[in-house]
Length: 227
Image (cartoon, rainbow, N blue to C red; front, side, top):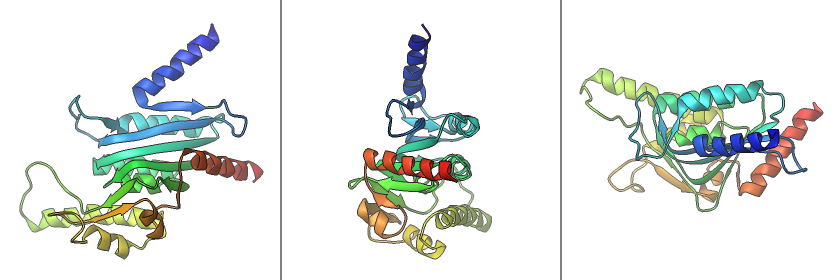
């Protein structure tokens, strides 16, 4: 009866939160799988027709994982178009501060605030066809056309660039250059990096898939256990 209940709970977590526990393979210990997909939802609720990842779900779940001695590692599957900057940075900061070994795998896209999320883990992978877009901060709604508004934009942009620089091999100046690059995005600013390009620029550690990501996470877990 207990096994049936546990199985139902696992299936419900996949349906509700895009999460699963990988513990059926003898090669590794208990790995928690989390997906960050669609748009990162922040302080405003998105329409029901939008695929989204809610940061108020992620934050307590990550804290619970960090407190759970049975969970030995976390694998993040990412396919996001970006979203709320404040919420995305909050999640990225929490991931980067975890003692539990973490690995990210960019599958389809990791755009905008998805870039800090992808690089916040201990090690990162990207599939050959996946893309990352680095671009300036954008705002929705009414914007006051005053110098203070542009100063605020710059402050937010600096926070993003600094976080990425601290967790990759790319300098803050280079990231800002990517943000303001012209000629790649039609009628817009920014840089598109596909698969190996993201590795070559130093944003992502390696091109790979699910097998490589799990193998690397197992290695990080073993290294931690040997300490």
